[in-house]
Length: 269
Ligand SMILES: [Ca+2]
Ligand SMILES: [Ca+2]
Image (tube, rainbow, N blue to C red; front, side, top):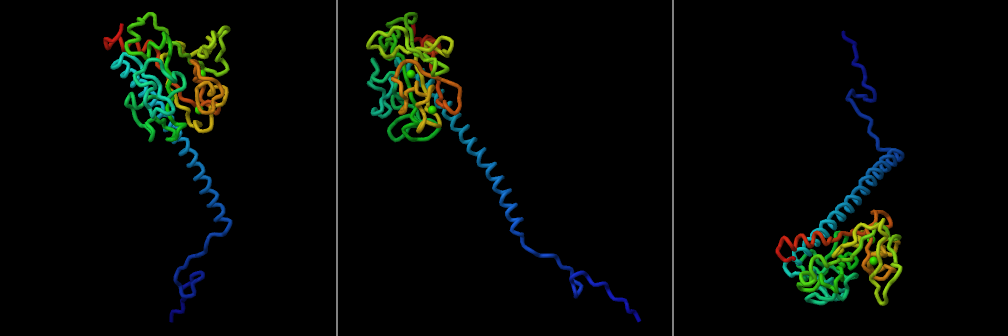
């Protein structure tokens, strides 16, 4: 007679295998949630930063396209367009050019030049949003009694006599008041020569950047006309290092580039 008995399996009176089945403890749940929170936080920050990079890049490309559009307009019309005013719906002011009503504190004339994307009022908007603070700004030189914005004005003045006068400083602290200003001239601000990026620009195109709705009154941004600027509009603009106090995106059209294209197109001299 075989009296051998199969060894009992632990916890299984009838011999079937079982597993320990229990839920997570509160401590374990807390640890898991903590790790998930860390992972989500780590993902959200880069996503926000990625959006900023995209907006910055979109705006840079838009500004570059705007400069190309100015060149195209100049070749077709023998002049640059005047900036749009805050009420002209993206159309240059005045229509037809000549002496601009807002040479240093206007908007890119998207409707006149034919460039998009525009907001509901016809203004070109940057990559940071679609409200009024995202409208692309544009300034043009008034040199040679507005020859640059007057039909055939450049040809009449002569290429060697044209002296476009918009200045770009790399620091707002270096925008200077000339020793002598002939009243009522309010457009003679200039850059200290050691802090000057350009002094012969014919046009400046810029975005107020990510802080367009809140910034603009700092040492650097206040020199680029904006809703919170505390300085009068003038011919000097600032393109400082990108950072917490300056996020405007500024490009300009040099006289060399403009004249080169006009000569190549047979419009000058
Ligand atoms: Ca800004
Ligand atoms: Ca200025």
